[in-house]
Length: 294
Image 1 (cartoon, rainbow, N blue to C red):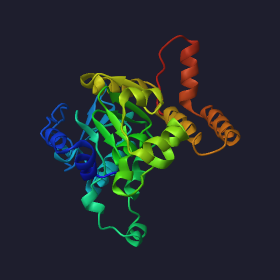
Image 2 (cartoon, rainbow, N blue to C red; image 1 turned 90 degrees about the vertical axis):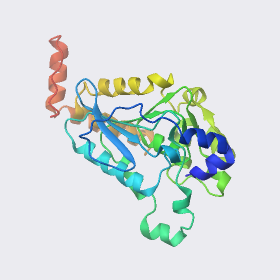
Image 3 (cartoon, one colour; image 1 turned 120 degrees about the horizontal axis):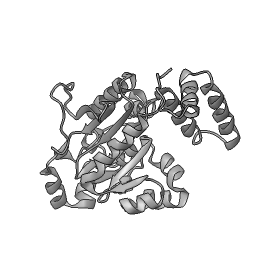
Image 4 (cartoon, rainbow, N blue to C red; image 1 turned 90 degrees about the horizontal axis):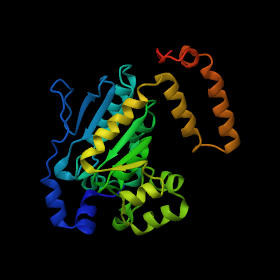
């Protein structure tokens, strides 16, 4: 993961960093009843109040991904994953930065043995282990660990001014939270090599062309459109959505032959669910389905 210091000092320049630090981060309204966190804000939004919204909230540090932030993020994701009222989760930052990298000061003096003993970055697994769909709404910089966090999500929507990159090479290290593994799977080996070996940024339009991002929106429409997507997902059976997510993810973990067997077993498995029966019955009877998550 690239550091916030390296990104702002070496690549962006102090002037940009100062402007970002002064950015207004109040573009999301959060209920006062939400649990208190220091590094994130959470809410439940949408017409049916079934979309969990998590905002990274370290604006003065460009949402640098420090350890305490990820502990809180992991806790929030686990809580929302266990909440039957939540259909999908949206993770976002602010208009200037989704997350511009890891907190270099926090890891600067780490040693190899300490990293091994403590399982450095293990908290990131809470994101990838979530059974519910997670959508990244990326405005501004998603660099280093920020890009890796976005790739941990199931779908990425981006604002038209978003910037992605893996600039770890500039500070003498390599991506450590999936950058060298997920990026080639999403954009291909050649493009991934170019991004990782140069540390260059890519803009939202290029990210969409290469398949890293699903769709691009105006900055002020991004969150609205992302919540709409989450609400659309929320109209389906939560149980079947979870199975569909697992089946798609399996494509990145196995051979085509094994993946097809996995898919077929899950497809057969849907016939043991009440929601599959309800869905097909509703289709035949030309009425909206009433899924029960069973």
